[in-house]
Length: 163
Length: 389
Ligand SMILES: Cc1ncc(COP(=O)(O)O)c(C=O)c1O
Image 1 (tube, rainbow over the protein chains, first blue to last red):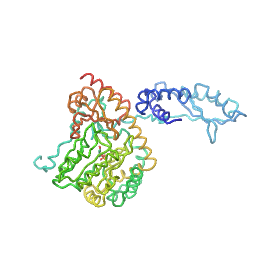
Image 2 (image 1 turned 90 degrees about the horizontal axis):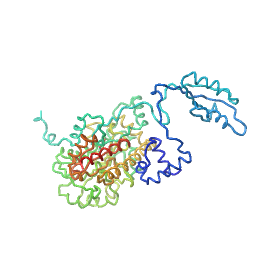
Image 3 (image 1 turned 60 degrees about the vertical axis):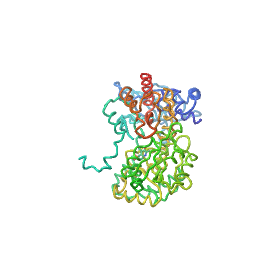
Image 4 (image 1 turned 180 degrees about the vertical axis):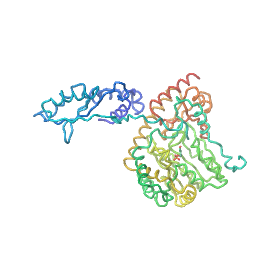
């Protein structure tokens, strides 16, 4: 990937709403170049979506999130692909990763409450034929996600005017 | 009490920045966006803070050698060699100071005698002249101009020299103008320095914050090492203002004299700050520095273009983190403009005249502030200009 694209990604991963014109000025290139690079990355699914990062613990109808380690037998010829797909197509599944180490898939599930998550695991996940075992871990608090710290820091501590 | 104060203490004027600070602080308006700061918006990188916390846990709370921890002086020497091809002996030619501020103070105290003239290109950082005056020296401002991108020219330097001229203070990249000087531009200055047997205090605290061309240290010019005292520190490039960490490098005789004063006045720089500084010079620390500099550069481009778009002439600052737009088109003095800007548009910036000759008609705007704040500040200034225009 070229440097311009990397620089653009660096900026918009922090603030997806930066206009192309501002990005262009900040990087010292033409706006058209930035717009074209962004378009290309959107088309290539490098940029998948522009979504807000939400601290759900501040929202009244709080959600419950769990990480589930899933051990499963890969399928001949397809490995873990189709199992992963069967899992990730459920809307309550937020993310699915293929892992090295003691288990195979790490699945993040979101539900309204513990019961809902537990029932998803026992009714939907564990019943998939190639799934051998699952271990469920509920997330109690999110401190940082995707490089963004959720805790609020004090305001700018600088003096308003200094030499 | 006034009667008891020493005349030299009474004589130094209160800083113009301080006056403006009081005005802004008294307004107590939470909504003010400040471009009036002189420090990074980054907090010190965590790895650096963590190193200091760890050293405290380990009980590192003692004095260090007066000149600073030997391993820190080594690291500074190595860093200056890697970055700027400078060659200083950590044992005799480097002293760790309480901020670049102390380095400037020590150097002027060690060099200035009553009646000595100290040449100071202006607009410039505000501490050189008062400290010169404290020692009985006479600060001689040399005006620099926007048309020259606020660079010092050999002609104007030559014109300011008298038989009593002893010292030249250089500060490139410049606070407040963001001006830098290239090797070719400094060569004629070095020639004049040599001809007139001057000593140079080169305040290169913004060296790393050079955009476009790589910084050239005045001390690295042919024949200039022994005539130059290099002052620098960790405040700006490493986002460490509150730690008070600086250093000075130069001829062993001068460093030796400065060390004597330093011994009697502060003994040594704080040990936890020295430990932190050492961490910031590790490869990981340097990477964090580079990341911050790139971010200033992006915001620099944004701000310069922003000022031009709202109709303020703005030369291109090539270093530090200040833009220095001209407000002459408004017909106001910089003091008047800056005051009205705070009160009517809620943007604080420092009026240029506080930085000495040539500063009138300009406004120092620090762009080490978030992109959203900068954009909002530019909008506000734009609206203010429309209102008064
Ligand atoms: C040009 C210049 N020199 C020196 C200093 C002093 O910095 P410190 O004492 O934090 O190292 C500053 C701070 O604003 C500065 O702008």
